[in-house]
Image (cartoon, rainbow, N blue to C red; front, side):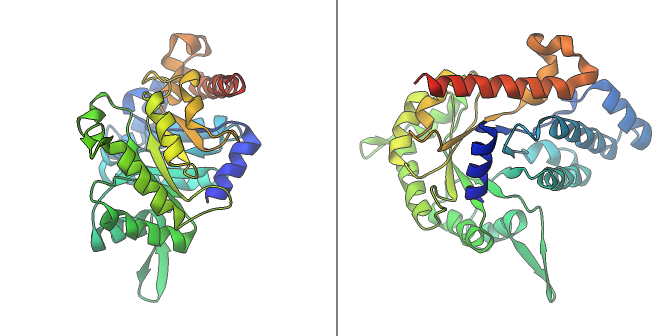
Amino acid sequence: MINKLIDKIRKTNAPIVVGLDPMLNYVPKHIQDKAFAEYGETLEGAAEAIWQFNKGIVDATYDLIPAVKPQIAMYEQFGIPGLQAYKKTIDYCKSKDLVVIGDVKRGDIGSTSAAYAVGHLGKVQVGSKFYAGFDEDFATVNPYLGTDGVKPFVDVCKEENKGLFILVKTSNPSSGEFQDRIIDGRPLYEWVGEKVAQWGEDHMGNEYSYIGAVVGATYPEMGKVLRKIMPKTFILVPGYGAQGGKGADLVHFFNEDGLGAIVNSSRGIIAAYKQEKYASIGEQNYADASRKAVEDMAADISGALESR
């Protein structure tokens, strides 16, 4: 799957992943009204609204981007109907040939970790048959429990030719409370990055490992260090746009081949119609605003990489 992701990045010339993280207040009123008219102001109505919202954005952007990243918590808050919307979103994105990164941030050990891995990336046995659960192409994983928590995911990834993005240095302001702590003379995130590179050596694609890393755009100097520590690791970079990251901050996340990173933007794209820059497009045409935001983001990143 890492090979497909790289092929699609080359084809689109847009190392961009759209974060499908829909809060209900992002969903335009006309979509909410239609969903509530059919299902009432219920969990089912909310789930229908976010599913239709997602579908509109995907229809408007799928030809410009290689991948999407639905964040499962935004769906879980609506209970079982929300998880059904999550699954419908995954299946629809895959029907458009997009790579799907399930932002699930799982982290446990043993059979629990294996069950998470099977549920999101593998197949579960039911009698004599096997079924894919959520069936994402990649999943995000928290490495806090060490190899015991990551190996079950890697084992399933090998079976299914799928991949991971492991949290190394996250974009949030308080990430340094733990991740920046000095351990034996080096910050913890460097030790984690080194381990991610080791795990990745055991599951390589043609050019890069199936085992990637998450490194926030808000810490470009740390990204520069981690890029050297993890030369064959694909880096998922959150924090672009709404969290303050911009194209010029991202150049160190990429290798000289122009690959090695994919940059996430969530509300900066899916709620673009709320921004002053795109307000003239209008709420009814929210998906067109999302498309324009993707085009602008791609130009920003491309320009930064060309001028480095």
